[in-house]
Image (cartoon, rainbow, N blue to C red):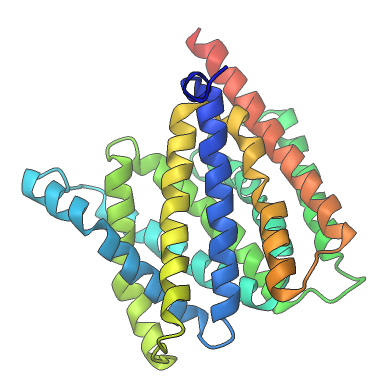
Length: 296
């Protein structure tokens, strides 16, 4: 079987796109860790938003000329951007102050917290299996954090804030996507984040040296490509097919962190991450199967 035949299969294509996204996310995390020794998370987030907007300029001009950039959901976009910005600052702080593997292990909680928020805010229904999966996932988080046995660091608390705010962002996107396209959502997210990120960065600003520029550009390129690859993965195949490859961000980031920063997560992190990921994947599997039955 040749490469072209394999690429024509939706599950294979989706898996490869998700693998690429995981590698890009791990690369971005390493850049953030390297830069965090010299820059505040507030400045790094602003640079990320500024360069991200720069990359999107061709789409902004094209859609603006066609009149397809207009939206009626500006208040919801503003809420989404505020949540996303808060989560990014906290994530960058976590990446700079705790093992990268632990950060991404805890961020696997996002799908489970999204379920809780969807029930509370959107009045969606969740069965006993979904709540059981949430419980198992949160036990996984306790395994990683081990409160009462070791002190829960400020960095770990920041990553938990990221998980909650990213889940809130998912709820906003789910509502916005009923009327707006993914490209619109991406563009408005970057444009609205610029003024929010700019003001705090002024108080901690440090002009980058020429040696910092490649790392900053790489951070933004990796994150932009990660978003693109992730969207293409979900577009190509069902979430329950590609989601296991999302777990690759953990071992890939651990390998990069080991070679660049000589750090390895504990066995408790691997155990907790496995519990969180298994429960998240189970929920996605159940939801996909339910949608298939309802549309069949």
